Structures are given as structure tokens and as C-alpha cells.
Length: 138
Image (cartoon, rainbow, N blue to C red; front, side, top):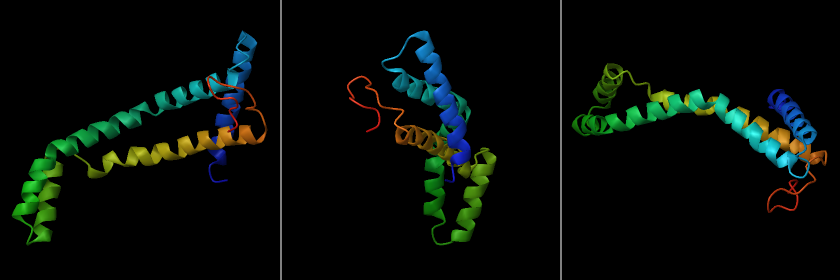
């Protein structure tokens, strides 16, 4: 599929984590623990993107009263309103797209993780219980 270039390395790393855990002696819940470990690794790697996204969102929320005032003041003239809003963003060094662009970068990575787990389930590799789940394959 489209995310095969991401699913294959993630699947390989999941299998590596699983084999490492079974070597250490965690045999009964090794797939569940390796999936949680892989998800944690991915979240740690994408944390800078999440942090920048949250910072941008907070800046936009702080400017919201100013933006609302400008929208009310210039509602009859949308061209001037957009120019004034752009000036506010520029003066405060805020990029309105900085809140959504990091999420767009993270979505394929988590789709790759989903595809990797789905591939392992199709291979019947996840046929073991985890916590209260009788089977990880679903």
C-alpha cells in the first residue's frame, strides 16, 4: 500500500523488539509489550513535532481576542480585515499553519504503525493474550 515504506521498517522493529523480549524471558505478553514499546518510541521521536504544534496552538489561542476584535471592526471590508489579521500574526511571529502541519507529518507514521500491526495480525503472529484481551489479533 501507500504506507508500505513506513510499515516495513516498523514491522521489522516490532519483530526485533519481540525477539529481544522473548530472549530476555518475557514470552507470555511479548507482542503486547513490544507494540507498546514501539508506540512509545514513535511518540518520543515525534515529540518535537507535537511540541511545536502545541506551542503554535497556544500562541493562536492567546491572539484570539485580538483577532475577534479585528473581525468585528472590519467585518464590512474582508480585504482589510485579512490584511490586519496577517499583520497581527507577523508582529507576534505566529504562523497559522504551524498548528496543523506537524500533525500532517505524524499521520503517515501512525498509519505505518497500524499497517505493521495489521500485517503481523494477518500472519497470525499476534496469537497470544495480553492483559485482559484473550487474543491480540482482534
